[in-house]
Image 1 (cartoon, rainbow, N blue to C red):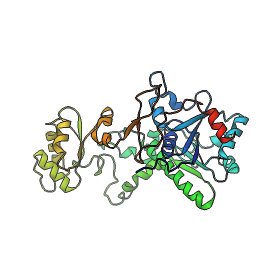
Image 2: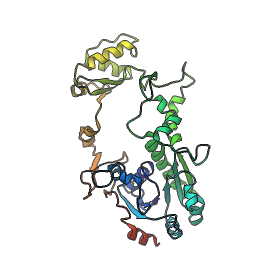
Image 3: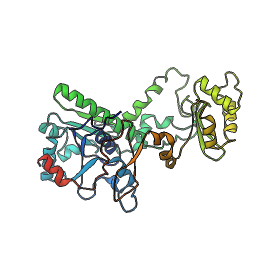
Image 4: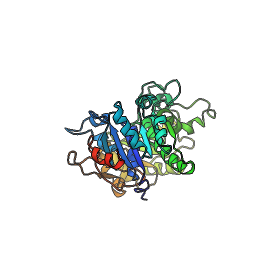
Length: 372
């Protein structure tokens, strides 16, 4: 599969900072869109400094801003604002992640953009949406997950506190990915109508949408699902994480009877009918899995097709055979930060492998191309 050139000719102006917006525009850049980061002159995208990588830019910044160009503009300055609007007149998409109302106060909101270019698509990513009682409220991923109900479903112990995931679900899944889907859909719709659209992407709603299946069973269960009680979030002995002899972990996803039977056979366990999820099975699995190391279990179970895999630590992931064979990781040549790992998306390897831009690196080049 190769979609690396699918968006060639699409021009994107990226006003966003930190993680959700830049991750979204990285997806578009990987698909061939020309993405221009429009940054404040002195500091630029805050992610450049958070957290620092040695003496250079942040590793997180480098990893989600590949294949883009950077220009600097002070949108509070009338001349610079006019320059941006001149660029928007020739662009296809603008992405922003300020609090609702900020781009309007800067004079580059939907009214100003659509007045210059009726085909422009403005994608606004915010925590709680452009309207409603929380539109002006500050928040972060943990807050969005809390109000979406996702955090309340996380963790194995229903009597203990919820547990945080290892990645920013609302930022990336709830904001960036829904934003990318919305932009691609709006581009298709624009071909039909001739007009752009203002896209209102709430990260809270994006995370909440992922609970569609759980809300589907709210009224079918005796009690509302919560953390540690559902089939897929800790309530089932055959679907969980077990510690191995070396203090590492094995993921067990033997939901269907055939997978559980294969796991039991490989582990030397006899299954009592009807006891797939009881405390006894959990206790027996805990004891037997603790008798071997994680990698010993991975080798022993590999041929049994029983939905069990080792839990990899972050530094182990790039060297795993699956990811090596499928070419998931690559490097973008960067003299200032050699060795920075890039992760391709499931959409395939990007055609370009340019490093993340330095602040204002492409001012002259981009302004000339846009005729401003």
